[in-house]
Length: 248
Image (cartoon, rainbow, N blue to C red; front, side, top):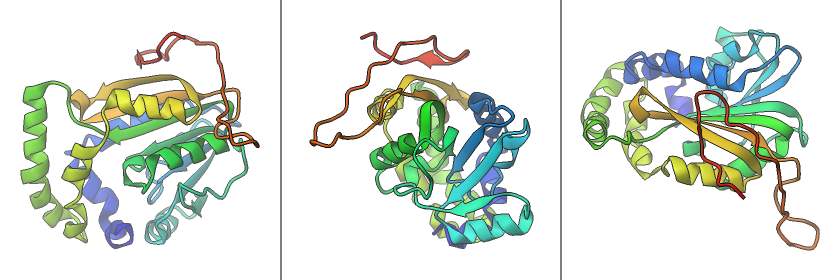
């Protein structure tokens, strides 16, 4: 599907988001807070539009995507950018390879988001950062109804004008409606081996930005088949985000 939409993917995203995609990318970059010398993974990077700004402050950035069509388009447009083919469920990177990992509008498209988060935890160093930017449904009922009306009505029409494969966007409204709410996603992120999970709404809750810190232990299961248990100190929530951690 993503190979088919690659030629006009970035333009279509801007049209369907009514230009708000730029501000969502900027908020994601700010939440990652990549510093010079850090290693950052941009997962579900597509053509690399989201990858480039992550390296502005001197971080070593890698974009990773499953779609070869997306990667080919990205390499043509940005030949100096490091783009790697990889499956979010089996990433081609060593344990603890990255200081920060971000995934924008890609977790919802994996076949197993829980397994994808566990794999992200594996490649994030203890104390490293995760930022997930994903579509959601607005919390305020009147705005939610208006937004769902846009998804079901206007969005298909706009995709026919902007996309190289409009049918590929037919799934979008239903996938957003089926996606877990903020609290459930935060709990899933914690269960994958992250702590200090926090979120904030963007554009009235059309998009939600989750941020978390990799716990000090190793996520997953130990050698005898029992679940690992990691306890971490609870630091303050990142500025501007709602702290969702339960006090333990």
